Length: 465
Image (cartoon, rainbow, N blue to C red):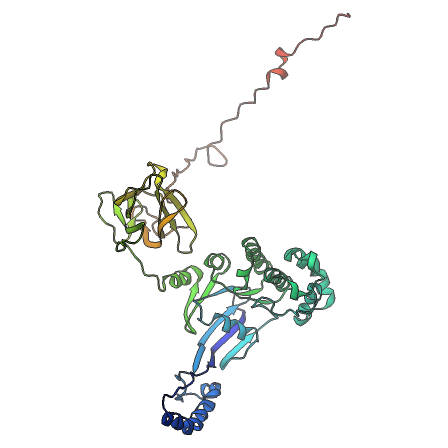
């Protein structure tokens, strides 16, 4: 892992955005604006070449924090080792796509240095790298040629590309007539099968369906594990990032906020703007038919749990709801998800109690036995339903609970969602055995069916009729 494939040093990218047009309410104001326009235009022209000021060491410029400058990236530095899968995450506008466009040489940086050691293939936007007037077949060869491959190399991979993309029926149709999903499938198939040494994939895979996304993730795992290719993967799908990437970058406001293991960086990303809530409360609204007013976790004695919850002890989630009318078929639901949004558990009132939502304010309680869930962080969603196809209210991720292990010697968070502690026993060795363990008792021979047992088989008659 000491061999770097990508080196990024102090990378910055700044754009100049348009200024709002000045409006004047009076004739004198318009005349003054007309006279001062040459000076304003000179100031804007001097700020156009922001990269020149960035390259002057130790010389801050007055235009650096100007309102008409947008810093898409600011002093970003990292390296990617050969054969590594690096995830890049962050909220919209964090600078992820700008970073990948610079690495793909689609745009140039304002300052800094990028070193790419290997042949690069990029999948940035739907249809990127495709000529709309050419057919799918012709675009496969065009992309391979751009990557520097010979026709014989493309011929060897052509059938695999077509099979993976699933567009064989439309292969001789111009790409401009493809749907966005077809373009993505063909583009990813080309990028993954033409053996680039560095593969850059943006959020474009979100256009494909769930089955194709799963195939893409599997293909990327295959090419990195077998061929040692380097992958940069940008996505808002934290499950895909967690499954695919061994290391992650978190961008925010154009800056590198965090770098480290995927699990650690994803946790930091999910905690941004989502503070832990140990209790949910809402004021009643007389104009609504039904509302969830309160969600709170409680211990076995009914006391609120406002911190971490011991997984070795039972706990409950209490829900206070109000309804303007009685709903005989109504019910409440409680679902738990992990920090990545993966469903963990779902239950509703009808699991163990009669359906029905009374009018007015009612309190409901669902109990969780000890060690049902593995230690970890969970988000709680509660729904209030009238039982005839309508949802009166839903509170998504209104509560967060953290289960911890204070009872077993192992402690800590665990992989998976089940917390049951399974019985283990040490096998006692016996003397005189070569393996050191007692042999299994000999198995009894299977009893043959009655029709095959000799004593039940009929004796054929030898008498001639």
